[in-house]
Structure formats: C-alpha cells, structure tokens
Amino acid sequence: MSLIFFVLVVSALLETALAKTRLFEWNVTDIDNLDVDKSGHPRWVMGVNNQWPIEPPVVDYGDQVIIKMSNHLRDNRTCSLHSHGMFQRHNGYMDGVPQMTQCSIPAGSTFYYNFTAVQNGTYWVHSHDMSQYPDGLRTSFVINNPNEPYDYDEDYIISLTDWYYEPFYKLVPEQFVTWHNPTGAEPVPDTGLINDGVNSTFKMEPGKTYRFRFVNLGAFNNYDIMLEDHNMTIIEVDGEYTNPQEVSSIHITTAQRYSVLVTAKNSTDRNYAMTAYMDESLFDQVPKNYNPNVTAWLSYNSETTYNYATPVDEIDSYDDAELQPLYDVYWGEADHNVSLWFDFFTLGDGASYAEINEKSFKYPKVPGLMIANSTNYDDYNTKPVTYGPYTNAFVFDYNQTVDVVIDNHDTGKHPFHLHGHVFQVLERGEENAGEYSDQTEHKVYDHPVRRDTIEIPPVSFVRLRFLADNPGAWLLHCHIEWHMESGLVATFLEAPDRVPEITAPEFVRHQCVMQNIDISGNGAGNAYNISNLTGAPAPPGEMPAGWTSKAIATMAMCVLSACIGMGSIIFYGMQVHPLPTEELDDEEDIKAAAEENAAKLMIPPSDM
Ligand SMILES: *[C@@H]1O[C@H](CO)[C@@H](O)[C@H](O)[C@H]1NC(C)=O
Ligand SMILES: *[C@@H]1O[C@H](CO)[C@@H](O)[C@H](O)[C@H]1NC(C)=O
Ligand SMILES: *[C@@H]1O[C@H](CO)[C@@H](O)[C@H](O)[C@H]1NC(C)=O
Ligand SMILES: *[C@@H]1O[C@H](CO)[C@@H](O)[C@H](O)[C@H]1NC(C)=O
Ligand SMILES: *[C@@H]1O[C@H](CO)[C@@H](O)[C@H](O)[C@H]1NC(C)=O
Ligand SMILES: *[C@@H]1O[C@H](CO)[C@@H](O)[C@H](O)[C@H]1NC(C)=O
Ligand SMILES: *[C@@H]1O[C@H](CO)[C@@H](O)[C@H](O)[C@H]1NC(C)=O
Ligand SMILES: *[C@@H]1O[C@H](CO)[C@@H](O)[C@H](O)[C@H]1NC(C)=O
Ligand SMILES: *[C@@H]1O[C@H](CO)[C@@H](O)[C@H](O)[C@H]1NC(C)=O
Ligand SMILES: *[C@@H]1O[C@H](CO)[C@@H](O)[C@H](O)[C@H]1NC(C)=O
Ligand SMILES: *[C@@H]1O[C@H](CO)[C@@H](O)[C@H](O)[C@H]1NC(C)=O
Ligand SMILES: *[C@@H]1O[C@H](CO)[C@@H](O)[C@H](O)[C@H]1NC(C)=O
Ligand SMILES: [Cu+2]
Image (cartoon, rainbow, N blue to C red; front, side):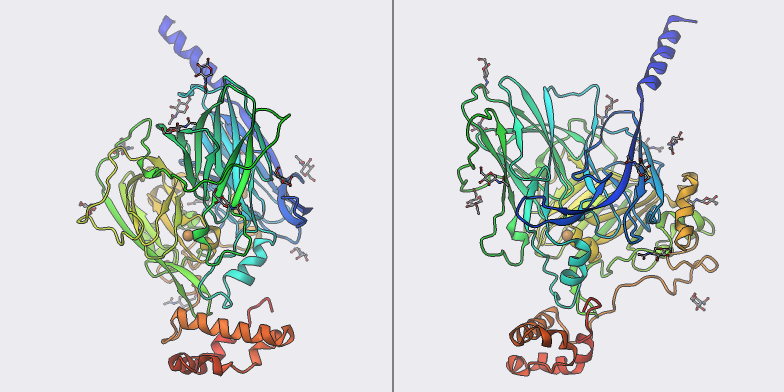
C-alpha cells in the first residue's frame, strides 16, 4: 500500500468516524398556561417533550441529523417540521411542507426527518402546517463548522420574535382572513421577545470576542437591533459567510439570520442594553401606549444595574443588499427568466387575499412532489398546469440558472423566502422605485450576497438568481405568516422529470393514505386524466363588479360601528340587521352596490 493511499484511506475512515448521527426525539405536545412575558397573559403553546422554549439543536458539519417527530397533540391535530435554509438536496421529502413534500403528520404518528448537515451556520426549524409556528413550534438550529474561518471565543444564539396572547388558529379566521377585515390589516403583536422571554442577559467578559447568532423566529415583524456603545461585525447571513462588515445596527426580517462578532469592552463597570426595535410601519394602526422596543442586556457586571439604553434619534440602518459573500460563486447568465408581481385584493367572500400574477395560492390535492413523481410520462410533470391552477407553478430544467424578478405592488415590506436554495441578490430597488425594468438605472451588485430570505421594499422589486440543481418542489413565499395564509406563495418545480430518482421512506406515503390523501395524480387528484383539473382547490371567486376594497372597507366599518353601538346582541344578529344606510348617503355607488350584494356581504363567518 503506497503511503499516499494509506493517508487517504485513514482520513476517509476518520471522516466517517467523525460524522455522527444526532438523534433528536421530539414529542410535539400542547402546553397550557404559559405566561411567557410575565405580563399576566398565560396562554397555550405548542412545545416539544412538554417543554417550551424548545432547546435549539446544535450539530457539527457532516452530522446525520434525525429529528424523530411524534405527534402527541390533542384533538387529532396534525403538524410538520421544516428545516429552514436546509437545501435537502436530492432529499426533498424531508422539507416538511404539508401538501407539497409530504402529508401533515397525523395524530399519533411519527415522521423521521433525516438529513445530512452539509451547510454551516445559523438556521431554524418550524412547523409548516397551517399557521402553527407562531404558536410555539419553532426554534433555532446551528451547524458548527470545525474549520471556522472567523475567530471568536464563544457564541450566543439570540432569537427574536413577536408574540401574540391569542393563538393563531383563532386569530387567522376571526381577525385576519375574514370579511370583518377586508383590507387585510394584520393583527398587531402584543409584545416582542428576545430568547423567548424578557430581560435576557448575555454574559460578557473582557478580552473575549463573541459571535451573536440572531434568528428572527417571528410571524410578522422585522427588527432593527442595536447594542448600546458596541458595534457589530456581520460575518454570516442565512447560513452563508459574508465579508466582515462593521455596522451599528442590523435589520432582520422574520426568518432571516445574522451572525455578528462583538468585542467585549475591557472595563466591567457597567452593563449595556441590546435593543430590538419593531418596525411599526407594518402596522395599520399602532395601539395606544404600544411599546415597540424589546430589551436585553450585555452583562459585564451582575452586581450593578441594568438600565434601558438612552433613546436613539435615528437608527442608522445598513443596506443588507450591499453585503458581499466571503466566497463568490458564478452561475453564469440566466437560462430562464421568471417575472412575478403581487398585490392584495378583496375576493368574493369579502376577505383580503394576496395574489401572485393574479392568482391566490392554494395547495394541490396531491402533495406537489408526489404529483411530479406520479405523472412522469407524456411530459405531464414538466407542465405547470398539472400541479393545479392556483399553485402558481413554475417549472425549470435541471441545472438552469434562473433569474426571478419579484415586483411588489403593495405598500408594505415583504420578506420572501425560497426553499431548497440560497439565491443571489442581484438587484433591489429603493422604496417606491416601482416595477423592475432593465432600462432604468439602479444598483446592480457585483459580488451579490447569497441568502435564503430577502426583504422587498414597498412598491419596489428584487431580482434574484439561483441554480436549479435540486430536483424537487420548492415553495417561494412571503415569510409573514399572515400572508402565507392569504396566499402569497408560488411553487418552483425543479427538474420534475428527475423527481422519481428521489426516494422517500415508506411512512411518507403511508401517512397520506392514513388520511385519505391521494398520493398520485394531478393537482386536482385526478390520476386517470392528468389534463383534467376539475375540482382543483381554488380561492374564493372575484368580488362582484363594482366592489372595490375601499367600498367594502367602508361598508364593514359602518356595519361594525353601528353594531358595536347597539350592543353585542345585535352584533350576533347582524346577518338580518338592515344596512345603516344613513352612513352611506354621500356614497351613492356604494349604497347601490351594497343593496345589490347585501346578501353576499352578510354571509356570517363560520365562527359566529
Ligand atoms: C415520547 O413519548 C413516548 C410515548 O409516550 C415516550 O415513550 C417517550 O419517552 C417520549 N419521549 C421523550 C423524549 O419524552
Ligand atoms: C380523533 O380521531 C378518531 C379516529 O378517527 C376519532 O374516533 C375521534 O373522535 C377523534 N377525536 C377528536 C377529538 O376529534
Ligand atoms: C437516515 O438516512 C440515512 C441515509 O439515507 C439512512 O442510512 C438511515 O437509515 C436513515 N435513518 C432513519 C432513522 O431514517
Ligand atoms: C462548511 O464547513 C465544512 C467543514 O469545515 C467545509 O468543508 C465546507 O467547505 C464549509 N462550507 C462552506 C460553504 O463554507
Ligand atoms: C425587566 O427589566 C426592567 C428594567 O430593569 C424592569 O422594570 C421590569 O420589571 C423587568 N421585567 C420583568 C418581567 O422582569
Ligand atoms: C462604531 O463604528 C463607527 C463608524 O465606524 C465609529 O465611529 C464608532 O466609534 C464605533 N463605535 C464603537 C463603540 O466602536
Ligand atoms: C482592551 O485592552 C487591550 C490591552 O490593553 C487592548 O489591546 C484592547 O484594544 C482593549 N480593547 C478594547 C475594546 O478597548
Ligand atoms: C423606543 O425606542 C425609541 C428609540 O430609542 C424611543 O424614541 C422611544 O421612546 C422608545 N419607545 C418606548 C415606548 O420606550
Ligand atoms: C450546473 O451548473 C453549474 C454552474 O453553471 C456548473 O458549475 C455545474 O457543473 C453544473 N452541474 C451539472 C451537473 O451540470
Ligand atoms: C433574461 O432577462 C435578461 C434581462 O432582461 C435578458 O438580458 C436575458 O436575455 C433574458 N434571458 C432569457 C433566457 O430570456
Ligand atoms: C414514486 O413513484 C414510484 C413508482 O413510480 C413509487 O414506487 C414510489 O413509492 C413513489 N414515491 C412516492 C413518495 O410517492
Ligand atoms: C373531469 O373530472 C371531473 C371531476 O372528476 C369529471 O366530473 C369530468 O367528467 C371530467 N371531465 C372529463 C372531460 O373527463
Ligand atoms: Cu408578506
């Protein structure tokens, strides 16, 4: 045996010996009466092994990660787990998206999420079933790199979240997707949390450099984070190393992650505040006495006091699209351009929905990957139409370089996330820049940062690029959970003709069968006539002509204010209560439309 061969064999053996299997046994459980922020608002949360917060898994590069997830929830409720930012290359059945990569995990069943940790950095895991994760089923997830390019002494995982005292399963139908809320105003979080609590402290010792891993586990809000009298050096975004970039604040949307290096001061005479400022511009109405500032402390000296930071005049925010990757990659020019635009509309049930290219998303009847797997003949699985008319499906050939332009026609900010990939941020417009055009002048980034979640400014755009090297069915969606619920989602089908090469353990299909969910056929569940999409899931129809969302908003306000004035008894009888016509006098068109469509608007929501 030659020496070189011997060395190779030994190092190969060492590597396999070092790659450990990390098994996490997670019983998903209901936990009652948790007063998370000690404010006297105990609530139910979804936890793991009867504990909450859920302890973040920390593994090493190369580890085989198995999250054995057993559904112990009450009332036959389902669940799932998506590992946010994990590529799951050739492993798409482990992406955790019900009706796209698997069926929801039924009560009493176990799903083994099984993947190799072949990325480095800061991630998180969360339920992708309904709107569950804001109710607690989420936590950070770290993969350590044994050959870490940056030096630091210790690291802290620091989660940020917005927190509601009412569960999402109630808020969504009662306050968000309902004709009471035709403009789609999002419920405002009751509070914000750092590390799932208040007044967290992070011990700082002179002479040490710390890596803070910020993870936004929230449902809605973004934060600007500042450390009192300490700068931060960004070294990682969304699992990708960046060139070091010194900043005084970071802006982090829901689902994004940042690692920063912080050098401790030499003196221990006082403590310093870490403040996370919520972005109140996302709120339609800021409640009176609302506190948008969440505070934690850099603790140098536990003997002395913890004071709130002196108010800052302005947050000096850094344009995160300017970040540069530590390692450049070049995927060539685009082989395929996709152009998307989105906005919000009131649909036929009087509620507000998001539409991408005029379609509000609905999951297909058969999980997307199983559509691709079962219709791999006569070119069916490479046609977007096969996946259903409201899946917003786009199909890419294997290894194409894809450019995606997303035009935001809405006046809010939206953090978009792509599953299965990181993308390069090639261009991003300023606020109110309008639609993307390759003719107008704007910044083009020469060393584009790679990440998996990007904020699109109001009435503006981004141009993203990714390499379609991961056969599968990947969601592209806004990570504001309210907007997931209103349909701000598209499906990217990558090399669907290669999906049959991906294997799935038997329980994946079995869990569908247990719930009578079809495992073959098109988006409508038709396995015999693939081009017949009759019966595919669809959003409510268009509003009757003449109904602008402004008119509906006016109407709903009138109805609500009239009814609140007359007491809750009448509120329950609203469906038979005559329209308060005097309020509409000056808007003749609204009145006419209202009479014509009164029956439609008066449909009581199911919760009444
Ligand atoms: C999960 O639940 C099963 C069945 O009740 C139990 O045997 C097991 O010990 C639980 N696992 C953990 C980690 O709590
Ligand atoms: C849960 O499902 C089982 C079996 O389908 C059924 O017997 C039971 O009534 C259901 N329980 C609830 C609370 O829905
Ligand atoms: C996880 O996947 C690996 C690699 O495919 C396989 O060898 C192993 O048996 C799987 N383990 C479980 C518990 O599914
Ligand atoms: C992640 O870490 C592993 C182990 O050190 C290394 O081989 C790999 O190149 C790293 N990946 C990136 C993108 O830095
Ligand atoms: C958090 O710290 C502040 C400032 O020291 C204090 O006023 C507040 O009561 C603390 N809150 C809790 C829940 O401990
Ligand atoms: C932070 O960086 C700014 C700009 O480089 C610098 O002026 C300031 O002194 C730094 N602050 C600290 C605490 O290092
Ligand atoms: C702390 O003291 C050391 C040694 O005097 C010095 O090199 C270093 O710059 C100081 N660090 C800070 C943050 O002031
Ligand atoms: C939140 O922080 C900002 C900026 O420092 C400050 O102006 C504002 O007064 C703070 N709000 C509350 C309610 O403390
Ligand atoms: C996919 O495309 C990339 C970038 O163009 C290239 O480096 C790589 O070799 C291609 N892979 C395959 C399997 O064709
Ligand atoms: C994609 O769009 C760019 C910019 O508009 C254009 O230069 C390029 O030719 C397009 N590529 C394809 C394959 O259509
Ligand atoms: C994919 O299709 C093959 C038959 O073509 C089948 O054996 C396999 O179970 C299918 N996989 C899934 C997850 O449906
Ligand atoms: C399409 O499917 C629907 C529902 O399954 C069925 O009623 C209809 O007859 C089918 N149409 C054709 C042309 O096969
Ligand atoms: Cu959004």
